Amino acid sequence: MSTHLKGLSDFSHIEIPSAEKFKFGIVVSQWNAEVTGALYNGAHSTLIKNGALPENIIVIQVPGSFELTSGADILLSAKKVDAVICLGCVIQGETRHFDFICNAVANGVTNVSVKHNKPVIFGVLTTDNSQQAKDRAGGKHGNKGEEAAVTAIIMATLQAALV
Ligand code: DLZ
Image (cartoon, rainbow, N blue to C red; front, top):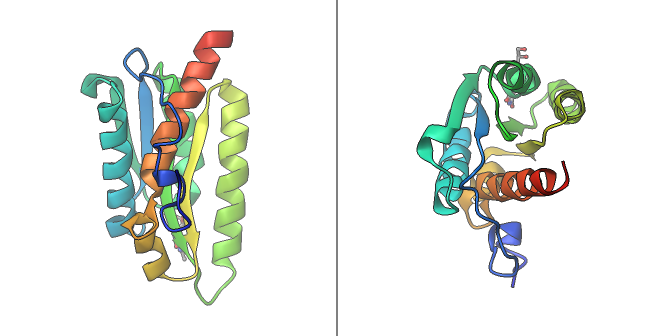
């Protein structure tokens, strides 16, 4: 059962399908690298724990969350993957950058998913401060990277079942 603290990172209430037959892409933003590194560790270990083969996980890095969309697009154009996980961390600052980046990456991830007809998962933290981000990257609120990986497995399985 999920708790108000751990959120979706507690998966004991759902059955996660095997990831063994799928290929995954992971696009990691280098901005706020300590947080995105923790998200990456959570996503990668969750894929492996659920049967994905290490050689079937392609990882690329992009400079910031704004570039997650083009990173996913490049990856899906170049490699045959069943789902892509975008990992980033946007922290509220003193300018409107935050809003532009969050809106751009949310819309961009949706658009690239539709363009390639593949699941592209939004594993981007959008927080008021770095503590909130750390709390969601392996801290007291779980790890959003793990959630993103589970979502990718579920969506890849759904597509394989229907297409
Ligand atoms: C410029 C910028 C700022 C201010 N803040 C963040 C952030 O909190 N998280 C993040 O992932 N990226 C940030 N960036 C960088 C942009 O995503 C992007 O890399 C640059 O604007 C260049 O396109």
